[in-house]
Image 1 (cartoon, rainbow, N blue to C red):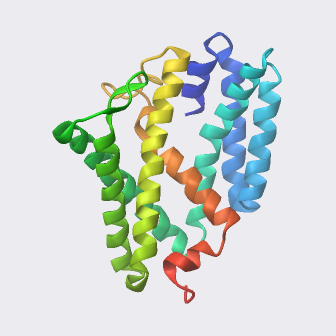
Image 2 (image 1 turned 30 degrees about the vertical axis):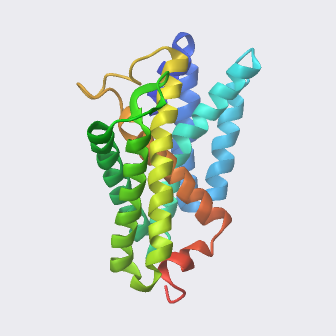
Amino acid sequence: MSYEWARMSEPQAITPAFGFALVGSLGAVFASSWGGLWVAAAWMTLCAVVSALRRRTLAGFFETAGGALYVGLPPAVFLWLRERAPEGRDTILAMFAIIWATDIFAYFGGKLIGGPRVASGLSPNKTWSGIVAGTVAGALVGFGCARLFAPELWCAWSFAGALIGFSGLMGDLFESFLKRRFGVKDASRIIPGHGGVLDRIDSLIAASLLVGAVFAFAPGFAQLLFGAAR
């Protein structure tokens, strides 16, 4: 992920961009395990800012700094969530299920129903019908997760599923924006026929950042989904 971002955003200075992003990402992963998410975020931010100081324009600064955080924080968030036992493991499993269902239903919903496009200049195949279908699918999977984890909290889980699914769809659209901005078709060619890792997990990146932010800034939200008993 660090390499793909450096390849897209700074093809003329790929080595330093990749180096800072990689060191920041690895450090954030270890820090999230030893010191928590705040330590990981602080380390990743420091590496991102130091790397961005190489750029000579304000836009370049924010591209480098924001990109380093974009690829570096999600792995740390996943590890941090996993260690919030037992709800952390269940949250990750639910997030994967919601994102997969959202992507599938958004694709087929857009194909079968069609209709107005969301942003033809960025991604001509994404339609509002696909967005709605994917978001509804996320809500339904959220409802299914409630049956497994906390049946009495089905309403909260359905809302969370819709929100996570929608964030994943926006993450996919954001990745299209980034590729259009940097003038590339795919983040890389590491996966034959599918582009790069960033092309495959853009929805998960956005969803993980959303879930991580909610759990970090509103720790009581876990009780809303899993009940006070957990």
